Image (cartoon, rainbow, N blue to C red; front, side):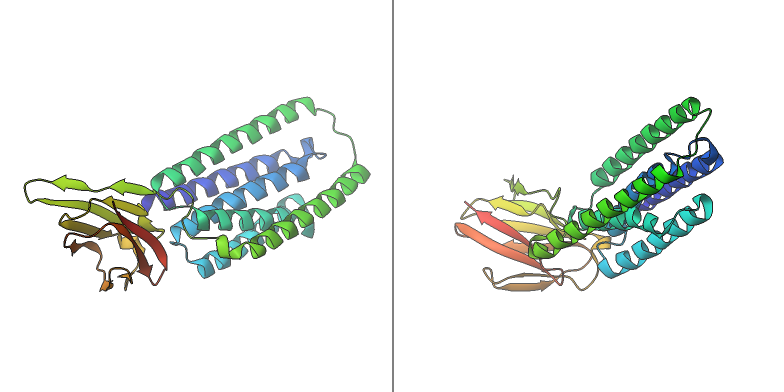
Length: 283
């Protein structure tokens, strides 16, 4: 959790620094300022929305509210500092939409957060590098209001079209969007405890669901399953399986499930109320 909050703070800090840097030099590159601000707002919105989704443990309603506030904040800042129009809200909306969807579909882990942080830092570095190069070359900027207006109209049309297309694609494939499906560990094999003559495996329960999703056991062997529930996974969780005939309430921490010499087959398990699914494979 500390890593997620720290990542959010880092992204906000870098975004603020970039805004401040562009504002102090806005008179020196007027022809490309709007494009640069749009790019910064879009990528920052996507990154922050992604981190918000993971930080709130996939609380969709709270994430949407925070993202709308973020979009409004970026629009107000852009309008106040750079005198941009209402069309500058589109990059922020597009970025927030993409970041929210990808965040919802990404398995919550330290690796995913660190990767996003690194990619955002590289983006900010390249953007500032480009801007500084532009500042050096633009010693005598010329007035290009008409051309800028045409570019702004074209970019507005393109961004609006992209946003509508993404919304349509998302709506059509809504049933295929699963929480934490990207980067979720897929399988593990149970370990053998010869001293106690049993096999055992630990399945972690995270806000994203089961980690790993599938666990492989040997048949006709006493089986011990340790269901370790993270603090962030929420309360009132239940492990259920119609194949095994169980519906067990889970507490935070380790929960022990014993299976007496299971037969070969595949046993589906689910986590309520999140409806995350997994599988116990005996072969």
